Image (cartoon, rainbow, N blue to C red; front, side):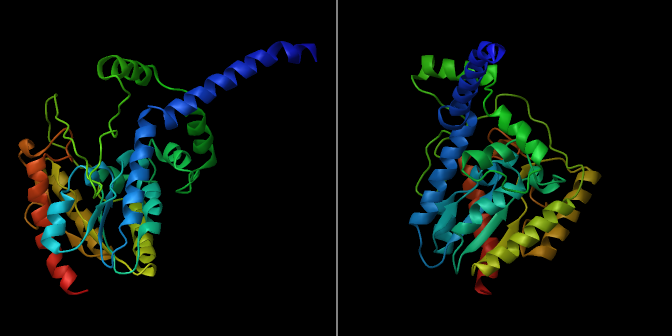
Length: 308
């Protein structure tokens, strides 16, 4: 018993430290806290806009940072809501987080990055953390071992994250993060991030995974059961046109078309050769590029919407 009393303060100190780390990561300035906040804002936007027929765009940051919802709305004559999130959340977690927002008449446009399409299990670095942060622990059928390990890490802020937060407080007078930028009324980001490093052309080393085919097929049925319609799109990427990449992208497009109508440029498969179209990643677009992409989406969707 004496030994227990001796070590009790250490357990209390460790528990307190973990709790403070958890609060920082999830609620008070860690990158996850900004992602959680962005998700909650987007869900609120979708809940408040319950008009009869909407276009809901989903995916990772390759959806969030690549569309101009207002331009698409004007082109199609219907409300557009950007529910794009973050690729490392994983396809298996992203899809069930948005399904409850689908209502009868909705058109759901899924624009998944290849990070989402190629993952063998549909999970990513933030799958566990995102589920816990949004009050849905275990979402995506996450294995127990991964769940336990990643949950523990939620209470352990990285030195890099703490250092960044400290500099933000000193330089900006507030905490900030990658997803802390304000959103507009449609859920689009209102700021632009610029790349500072050198570009290289992205290569795609394999086609869509069996898991992605299964999960998107399942999602199509869930959208249908809600009274909505699922449409898919290949993402725009700054990428290579080497034979392997082209073959894998073509195979991916073929597989996606078997699941649901899939939009993309037939000649390029949405592989772009000009890095000046892109912002800070191979998926994120500059404002003018988002408007070009919006017009393309409008023209590609119009024939499909006439069939509805």
